[in-house]
Structure formats: structure tokens, C-alpha cells
Length: 221
Image 1 (tube, rainbow, N blue to C red):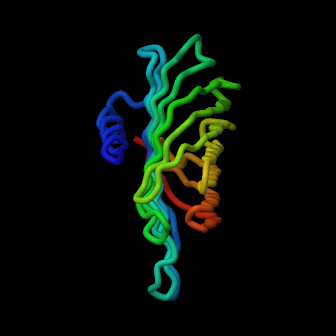
Image 2 (cartoon, helix red, strand yellow; image 1 turned 45 degrees about the vertical axis):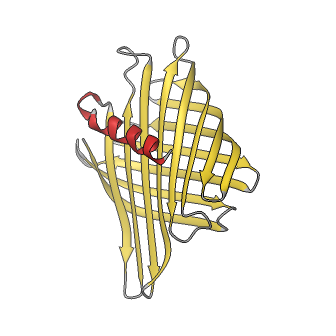
């Protein structure tokens, strides 16, 4: 399943010539005793005038250390493919999440599912969609059916300022995973963006709680 998820990501990112949106963001802080590094790469190919299919990829990395001791080393890759069922409201979606957690109970975990999505609002300024799916979480010593709910929202105040939020929850058996990423972005130029983001993750299977506010810079391609 790991190979499937990485293959999806590679195929999507390789087609950036037709991408609607590709961005990379880097943030963090370093002082005498602590280091924090966060990064995010987001890709979307969503021109529905060309195809009923659209693709999305999000890759997030968080690293924290204190006095040379690592407290967080987490990488997540989320990739999905949507297929339009009607005039833009309903769609089928297949989504996979790969997680590497150096300090977690399960170092490598893959969650692959299929479900339905619905666009509550879809305008040039504001977008809100909700998705529900059934998935399978797999790792060494783990094979668990989970139910996944997600909400994607964004609002564009003007050509410079925008806000976005992505919320994901997976539940089933020992798994209770919640992640929320809220980001405010300001376009300094056509390609450079200043960004403040709030990442909140609660992962019961790994007994983990992450709550970070980070300033950073991003590039749009």
C-alpha cells in the first residue's frame, strides 16, 4: 500500500505543467536548546472543464528537538482522486494517507479508503466540501477498518489574503486520529507567500498530541 500512495503522489507531482495549484511552505524556529522545522507541499489538479477526474496531494513534515533529543519526527502524505458524479456537487473519492512516525507505536502506517464527497459551497471566493469514506489502516501488527470524515474549506478575501482549513478524523478500533490545519496566507508577490499556520493533531493510538503555531514562507509554482 505504501507503494500505491507514493506512486499516486509521484504521478500527480509529475504533471505540474497542467496543475492549478502547486505550493511549498517552510517554517520553524531555532534557538540554543530547541529546534522546530515544519514543511508543507500542496498540489491540486482540478480543472473540471477538462476531465471528471481531479487530484490532490498534501505532504506535511514536523520535526522538533530539545537539547539534542528528538521529541517529534512526523511525516504525512495524503493523496486523493475525485470523480465527478454530476454538475459539481457530488463526487466519488479514493484517498490514501501514509504516516511515518519515528516515535509512534506504529512507525509506518497506511490508510486507504473510498467514499463520497459533497461541495457545500463552491465559488471563486469561497469553497467548502465534506467527505465521508470507509478505509483500512494497515501497519505491522495492525489491520483495522476505520471510518474517515474530512472537511476542506477556503476563503479568499482578496488577491493578496486568503485563509484555509483542512480537518480530518479517522476512527475505528484502537484508532482515533484527528488533524486540523488552519493557515492564513498573504501573497507578497505572484510567487512568494508569507504564512502563519496552526497545526493540531491528536493521535490516540500513538498517545500523541501536537499543537503548533508556525510562521513561514512559501513558494507558488
